[in-house]
Length: 130
Image (cartoon, rainbow, N blue to C red; front, side):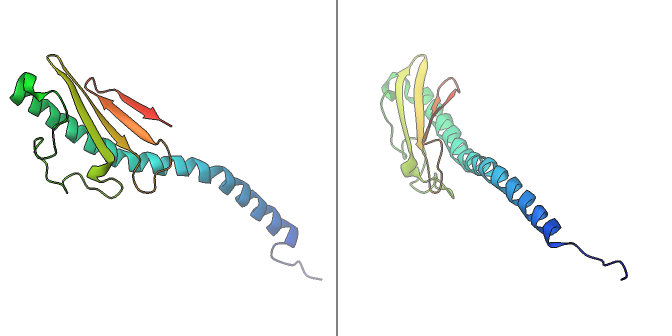
């Protein structure tokens, strides 16, 4: 018989097995990257809120302590809405005005599994809650 061209069934099964092993390792790694990318939208909005809080405290001084509304910070209700986050996902509080102390908290938005919450402080530190 002449030489046959093509792959045997065993060779094809080995290739499928290898692809399956690679996929089982890669999918969990990619899932974490997807959540991280979604959180980047939330962190950008948190940074915008922090900038507004700094301007609000500079304008109001010691009267700024507390929780200003969206309107007081210069936002309309839809300004903080993104693909994965809405204004309902964010809370903030000003605890001191001289020196300024505040926190901005975001809870996980639509389709985000981990972390469940991230907090931004006035010092620019991010704290994640699993």
